[in-house]
Image 1 (cartoon, rainbow, N blue to C red):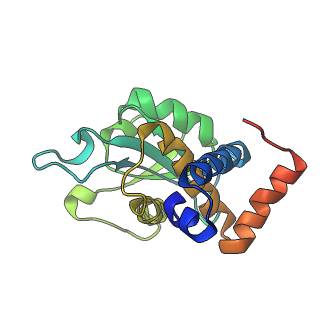
Image 2: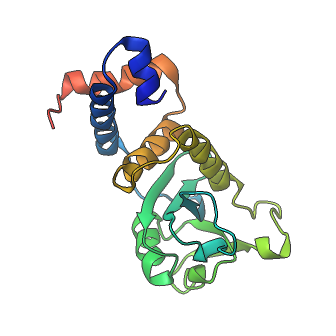
Length: 199
């Protein structure tokens, strides 16, 4: 629920609810598990922001926030905000989050060209050739996460850039826990009882 919906339901002011939601999301940021992944790993980037402007397409889309997602198949996802899709920007994140024995699957974006040279096993899927899956060679898992995250964020009707990372990491946390509703908030509130956060 949005802060306004929660305020309407509880009778607490929207400003107070909004402040509490920020505290919850800051705690989630501290709870995210970001140990490096091995095994089969999918990597993809996604843009978030206003509806695409006519004439602005793909990785050159302006006015949007860019995020990278790294998904260990069948387990967890890791996300981060990046400035651009260059090899210089993406490779250090990949090297910090993916173990050298991993099998990496990506699309055909040229920034991933250096993965083999850095010791990774790397397979590509070429979306620009209308190729979306070839056996185990696909990025359907991470694309499913992006779809889930965008559906969640759409209900907020836009976010301030300063809060985007908090919402992105909340989506990561929810996806990785695979629980919802009361169970999710019970887990979160339990962490406040164990270690209060007063900022």
